[in-house]
Length: 105
Image 1 (cartoon, rainbow, N blue to C red):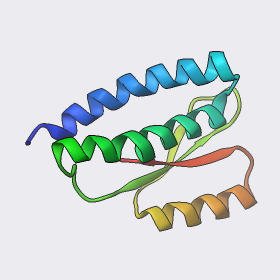
Image 2 (cartoon, rainbow, N blue to C red; image 1 turned 120 degrees about the vertical axis):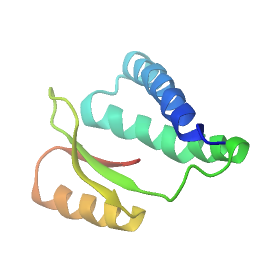
Image 3 (cartoon, rainbow, N blue to C red; image 1 turned 60 degrees about the horizontal axis):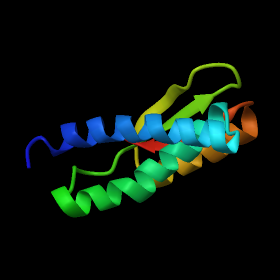
Image 4 (tube, rainbow, N blue to C red; image 1 turned 90 degrees about the vertical axis):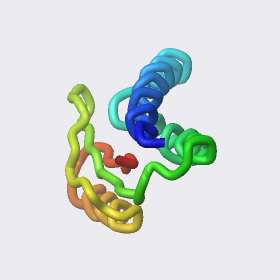
């Protein structure tokens, strides 16, 4: 399915909007914690199920994102393996302020 990645990106954007609303208004999550939890649900729960239906979307590649309370999220580094992303998050969390999380590209 050649446009599977595009369909995933469209589906992901819709799910992110809905989950951010739910987690923010119903559970009180904000900023980095909100973005981290939404990314985990979408990338670790929904994406594997999506790939079961449409097939693999390609090799796994992960980004590390960062948010400081009251600011938008930003990409710290992209194109990482999941292990590299976790290592970077551990290092940055020990060194700097703010919330770091991984998101599948």
